Image (cartoon, rainbow, N blue to C red; front, side, top):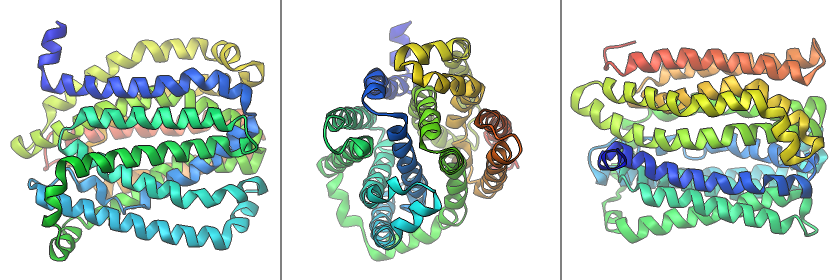
Length: 423
């Protein structure tokens, strides 16, 4: 049976990426009990705030053109899109640096958290490295270079984890998690750049101004629609951290961020690994047959089978696991994790399948969904603060909103898999 699975190209690619992602996430999960004894909930809250900002900026860093790298049939067209993505990344990073230098104190004041002001200077570097990695990882995906893509995730994890541990014993400890993450991101960006130069530098001569502008126009609906839908989607996931910090302080946001980190990361990275393969294979099937129903159904069964047992166990045992692993002061994080288990189970199944919005080029519909989601996520936390005065109620409402969104997204993705004539 193992031999049959390995001989199947799709399964082999999934296993390759899953191996790398499992290893890459086993490292930070394994050291989390150490980190929670080195860093305080406030330190985790500071990092969560920084991470939320960089995550939101990662959506606009290359105007979502990086997502189109897998779409052209010709590598010469794809490398022009890669070049376009890197140019936009550089420009946005420079603008971000200027804004941070001018308005860091204003931003910290808006969040009611002056401690973040001194660490905002690392945001431009972090988002620049994220932009490079995102563009070149899509290139690796296009070339089906899954071993290298898997290696990038392990490299980032090792670099960030070791740096965070080491910095926890220095005078830079309050921002050690921030610096560690930035170091890890820089290492992995260098890795993918080196891989491209080693294998594909012969394509650089194909980059021309005319081709780049032609392709920018061809895929202009990505910055027009997908960038804003992605910004709303990322904002929906990260604005809770900003609101929690503003409403209840760094300690509560630190507890919430640990629960998100532990419960979401293992499932999301495995789902992302599967999604990378699904995106490439489903796109090929879609171009060849006009639909990708077979790949969609196969992926749904695979994800459901992989997720049901671990998420069920987490729902039952989350609180005692957190208390034992991270210390008694982190028990509330386990309560948050238990509440969000259903949401993350749905995310595990739906996120890879939602690549159908990209493959079928349904950016307008995606933008509508994300706008509605963002509105209701903000409303959930505002209600939790102003009506119920309780962060737990806010997390429950947040979970309900996201769970409904994933159900809608699954239905539409399934419809899109039938071909371009669907909704």
